[in-house]
Length: 390
Ligand SMILES: [Zn+2]
Image 1 (spheres, rainbow, N blue to C red):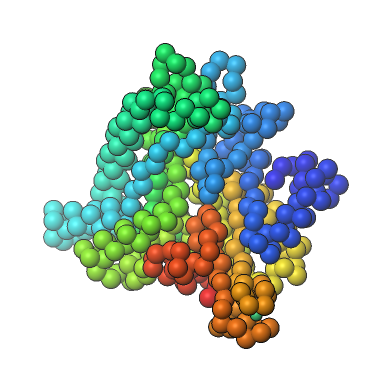
Image 2: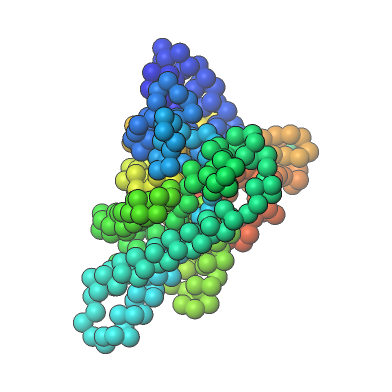
């Protein structure tokens, strides 16, 4: 999406935007990447290689601290996300609480929890940095011949023989990710970022991630970035370990998954516009990739104008990367596509493939392709028109 190109009637590619919306309503794709996003400032309008773009599900390359002289540091081509480490926020929140109760018996209040949490989180962010540097160095110690096609075909650009593969890798991004901000806030203060109080603390937490990554980037001359992790498997494995240790806690571990990154919990009732209002306050802290979703029902196929309004609203709220989920079920006997509950409304068949976007990607039937945590997450998704997705 780009102002003056495809946003408004009369723009040269407005017709393509209309086709994109129709495709999204039927097949969930494309997603909408915001070229006007403030986080990509410094890009060159005459050089599409510097336009905001994502790799697959959400990862993004920000400003390259190792850009060669004469190369725009916002260049995306020939770079990639080298490695992530994800911090499980709810676990640190529990550790902070435990720590407070070990030290003091009485008069512990929220502020103690928060201060202790922020200290522990800061330590964890530093640990994540050390892990990333170790992995980065290990990757860079590989023999260039192990992935020759990467250097020779510009997949990773900047390779110099005498400097080894580090010469290309140093343009890539190494990222500190996060999981379960909503549950973390519930543990610390009993509400999440859908409330004003929760949002205040959420911003404080994200600011720490942002400040530390900026500091590491300068200090180590490597492209550290804040990443809102997809956590395809981790959302479930982390929850299982958490529950073994802390049991079932309401609004924290009573589902089979932790909420994706800083997302609004999938069970929270709100309109698409409210969802965008909340998440757009946090997307600006991430320079290495994030996505905002809204869930709509199948009837959107008949209301492309409404869809356009929602996408435009997200772009105007400075959401970098936006996607829409609609149910996409397919009768394998008669070919009917739409939302199917138990059996096909046309032929009555129970031979149904249920396509859902479970993380960034579409898979086959999500009930066989994804772990129980992700299936449970899909089950708890509330459509942002007020009803349950499933
Ligand atoms: Zn059918």
